[in-house]
Image (cartoon, rainbow, N blue to C red):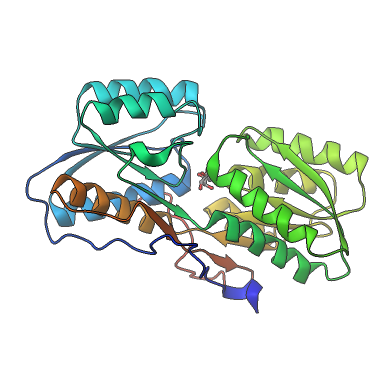
Length: 314
Ligand code: T6T
């Protein structure tokens, strides 16, 4: 069934992989700037990048802001760019706010590779590598349909507007809900990537709509807070939750029955392809402008030992 283990197939014209070069022609100096530090999605991506860097013989330095916030990420970009690295792999925290700093770094000769999130104008970058986020949002709704075949009210817990990944997931979910008249969409809440805020927002929404049957939590921290809020409201298990991402906390919530399904991305692969793209471009080769990686759906049935679960360290 589609909720047990579906890989995304439709790349909408994007490439689905990047060919790895055998070795870099020299030891390039590459920086990886995460969307936020301490997030298992970006930790797993870092692991993929570092493993590939070792294979190709280049040096990678990783850092990330303390919050998923362009006002904190921009100074990191500016200071990294001032050191004129050969390439920057980055998950921009906002499609608009990160455009100018990254365009400036590109204009100064640093190759930019967008990993996970993108920009309003990604043409300043060598390539952009991301999950099929639109398809992932649709898969999240399909999981809710299976969990609640009788239908009812559903909502989305997102992080912030202006983040390409979660915006695409919300859109994919919303479009899918519209195709099934048994379901009523009560809207999206923005939790600013803060689990405590997500927990507050979910309990407020449950006061307003006590008959909500399903929640799509659009990333790791939205899912964490949604699970907490439902537990506090005594609604854990009664309301079905499908979360994006599969960190240790989400796996715990799945096993406890607070969350029923997880859409797991492939962060290590995104990182690996990002590093491959940077080295290929630095050595004068060409890479596809857009690469889309897949996802899988994890439930209680297939969670044990599932290789798609994110890492907390490499
Ligand atoms: O869902 C991932 C990532 O894809 C998104 O852009 C931001 O949130 C995460 O890092 C999970 O916390």
